[in-house]
Image 1 (cartoon, rainbow, N blue to C red):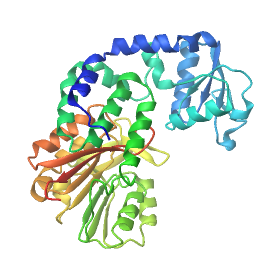
Image 2: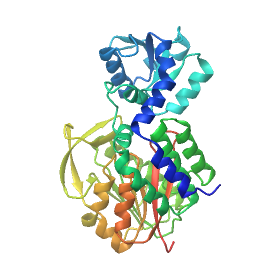
Image 3: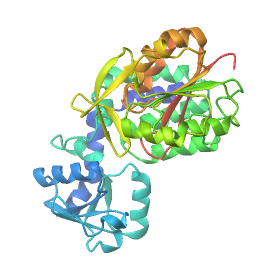
Image 4: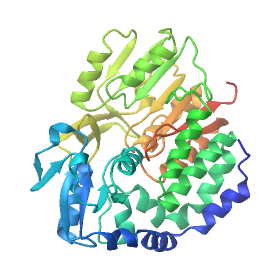
Length: 385
């Protein structure tokens, strides 16, 4: 892999602005706007329904929504907001398709193979016109705060432990600055080519030992614990498992019933112990002031009694808070860390800066494990390993 030069990365950070991106996008997508009077929406999930309401209410660029498209045949023939759901082989016109799916690259590829229709991600629309609301905030936040973040991005480049990390960081920022999905695909391809593709356990970055004490924050249904057990050949000391959502926690306990030495805690992790509101849907959840579920929050500093050797966090944007609540533990025991840094735009550098402030002299590695925006992991490996 060619060495990633700091000067090139510096130019990348300096040359982009929200307005230049908006101008480029408007130029690129004006033919799509002129092409159609109406649109299709690909995806019947929350984003698809959100996009439908936006398009129906605003009637910007296009007059209305013809139909939802979905690969799930169970949905075919149903109605959402009085709009029919069809399969891709039922598309009758070449109107623009608005893709509302986490699997944007896969759907985009399918459309190119099967249909003549032009397509674009819903996430581009708020950049074309401010009246469209963004689903989530990561992309627009990245652009709105670009002037604030520029120097932080440059500092991260210098702290990366290898050229692979620098290449991946370059890809992620290129995507944020251009909205071109090819950059996310490239970040994923580099990760797979240069490692074994094992999210959280990439042997190109870290090694597991026979006496590991694994702390899984955001344990979900137990899938990461099962991978940990597999990668240690079922030889380890202990597992701490944290998951706040009631239904997901119950599934995890069932899935991990045959796994030894697991301490289960139905709670989230954070900077302070307490109680928060929580929203969960389709096995996924996040802290939400308007949530219908109440969850407990614990500090890792107060509840992990063993010497942790490896901490993993995927907690929907609460990683920075959780790390602050684990600072004493991390400073004392210097565990390996695998932290998700994609939930908020500032996570990409604020999490690394916080960990670096602990004074442990970690080596920092970035890897990206999906061909979607999600999937960027920061590994922090003690220099002795």
